[in-house]
View: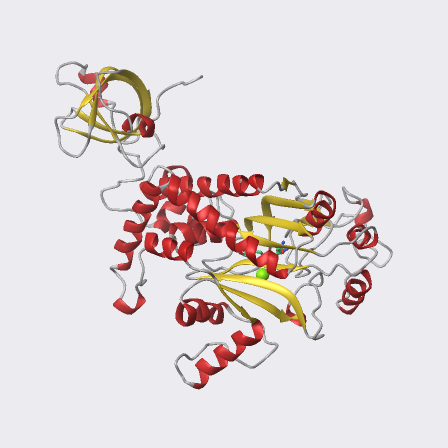
Length: 481
Ligand code: 4AD
Ligand code: MG
């Protein structure tokens, strides 16, 4: 098996027995001209490299500065010092990349703020916090594929450039090669002639792979997508990105309840995977969060630590209530003046704001909640119409500290009902002929949902800002790197 070097995580799991190894990594600190804390990104734990006094040239030792990169070969022995199980007694040290200590922007002595680190895309990965966050993100992504693979789902790659606005919210980024300087070809009425554009039509970046995913599900049975999605919502919040990753499973022969069952099992599965494989990182993040919360007044602190919260989620059923029941709870809470909302509870039919969702999850039930059967007016055209004529078979999952983490529904599989709803909502049926075909040729009941991957990573890592769980955040006014 090819192994360029041993990873520090793997080495630290071994017993020190005089074995000779080669490690490569970056210097975290260098003490007494002798002890190098070396980190290679595989774990937050550093390897203590001992450069015995007198053994190495002064010229070399001077180059061992914070964040310089090294290749070290040495023997692994039980450590004489406290705090680590092993030392790597260096036989040879090679500086692969120097780091000018004067110019180095991260002086880790005074902990840099998360905001500051966002401006240092490269170096923020070298901090313990982001090391843990991105290793957990990896574990969750891996678990997504593992979960669906074990269930026999087909992973589908739906297009990033598309002509459809699946959610009908109109918050799309236009994709065009036409010039923006006023010289674009025009129609007779003066509007831009997009027939002359690259694709011969208007196109945008996808907001969701669902509609294409439904074509897959109605042939392969069960599919999932896992890809980037783009929304030009002007929401500068700690929960919105303009570019985010979504997982969208779509299942033939599923109804709304099957959909909820799968979503709950899925969320628990990926959390459990991270708990089993990234315990150390989660414990680090739990401690970080606890330290951060010490700054807050008592009533603003979480009741449970991060690990306890995740365990609680794994060991309890999500609460399942209808939209109508939710409105009653919110109304009640408002009457009792237990909680005054910024957005008033005007009554049945209103769209829920995130403060309402968070009240239900954090104050009322104190656990994840699956809200179902929303008024059709506030949901997308493709959701299955219920017998009452007022609601659709939608379901959202709301998570403590985050709010909406999943949006999904049973789909309207009846062609006539779907066409009628599209007409009511002014969605051009001729453009979606390929979607409507799924209802023409052997339609089936089916359902699916979308999990916002970054919101999931936020939930598991306890990071309060979504910009800190994606490597290169894109938000209104910000697309650096
Ligand atoms: O609720 P949404 O809009 O649902 C859909 O797109 C459906 N097509 C899904 C489906 O049924 N296949 O988005 C799904 C999830 C939300 O619950 C949220 O977690 C996340 O995507 N999300 C965002 N995450 C980060 N930034 C944004 N701007 C987001 N908008 C939605
Ligand atoms: Mg939604």
